[in-house]
Length: 408
Figure 1: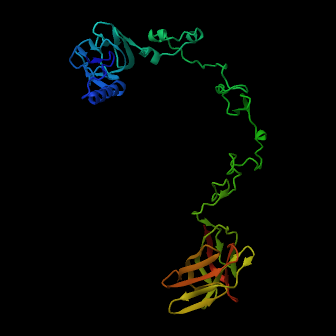
Figure 2 (figure 1 turned 180 degrees about the horizontal axis):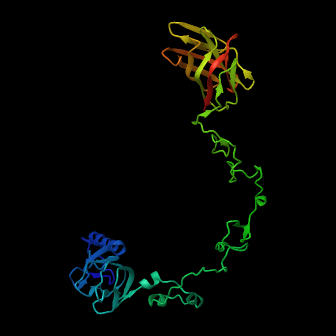
Figure 3 (figure 1 turned 60 degrees about the horizontal axis):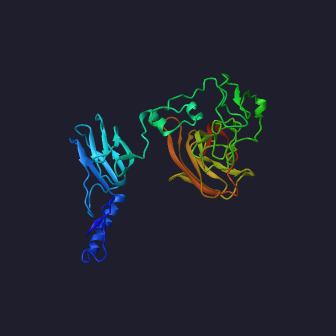
């Protein structure tokens, strides 16, 4: 005679029995074991008052599953009835407010009641159903644990279930008990109401003087790439900004202008161009010679060692009229003495210390006379650019106009 286990209703194979169906019986038993370990049964209680889980011997059923998922809105207080055999279940109940709730029970024994949505682990002892999960009510979720309960070791499941854990709020009003000190972590002490005081290493508010910080032209604690620190002393230049190395520097894209110099005498020299400059512009505004005939003046570059007077490959002049070739500087043609030169001469650096000149400019007398002229060329320096000199040829002087140098 074929028999089955009492708890999961799996087949007991008798010796010599079921020879033709032995494999099918084992396969069915394994499927049943899989349901008992990982299976989920969904019970929809919409409109009903009770539901009994199905049972089958060595075949798929509802009562053998590991988890019971209860959903829906029952018409009244409801029961989900499980077999009166020893078994563990996990139960997830999604329940709206129904008076009396939903009870998971056996047909004749007591059960576990769900009055709100919850997840519980339950077990059946063969007669009744019991909860292995303490009931966590709203009172523990919103309340605080009192020191009385802690000191009396009174945080028990009974007190939690009965809502006996009450709320006591932390009070910090003028309480120094837990302030930070040299022996413990703690709260920041109450603010002293004075902007002159700072929290020191002993945990006290104290006045900090300039002499305490030693900031008088001392760079020891300036910020750097290896540490936090103070901002370095301001350089006195609105063109400089604090860069990522902790130094004041001129941003790479910012044009910096020198002081305007009037064109008088035989030359004008600009110094102090930084070694980081890759572009220099010389702005000419009405620069003219005192000569009564057409002639040219010259722009020369230099290093910190002095002005470079050789090695130029340069040409300047008026197309179709005259051009000046020069190895001693960049020639700037002044077609008529009464006409001033207007325009921007560009000096651009390549990857080394080679500088290229480009100058398309106008000579104009302020009335009806004017013409366009050009200058171009190249010169190689032995070190970085530092000076620019604009000078006349021997026997001439500047008689009008001004120069400005800008760089970046």
